[in-house]
Length: 182
Image (cartoon, rainbow, N blue to C red):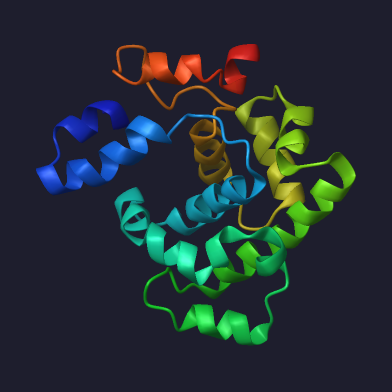
């Protein structure tokens, strides 16, 4: 069952949580590097868990990770790592926390070399899912096939976030996701 159809079968409170993400964020292009970083961190933290868990914790993730401000997260110290490990509002997994910090540093380097994280992504577009996974594994930490696929679908670089019969599909097309230019 697609994400689009699954929402319709959820209880009202679960539906409200998912609907906001589905209708306004999932599959839509993101042009802000901090928000791209946010989405990458959230997708990494979702590994092994439900997306609903991540949606419920998004606000506390934003607080814990200084609203995903790349320069701030890249400068985190061991004390920040311990603070994050003690924060019940996020996923307390040392590998995921370390990946967020190291990936922030990597994105800063990509910004220096290419102007922005978004421009680095655009430079490599289009690629197949397999090519993207290989590139991400070489460039970032904690980025396997599902994480990369969901990240790139969620930001409009790979198709599949919405089916053509989804009520949001036309809105996504109007936002001109990158997969349309493949």
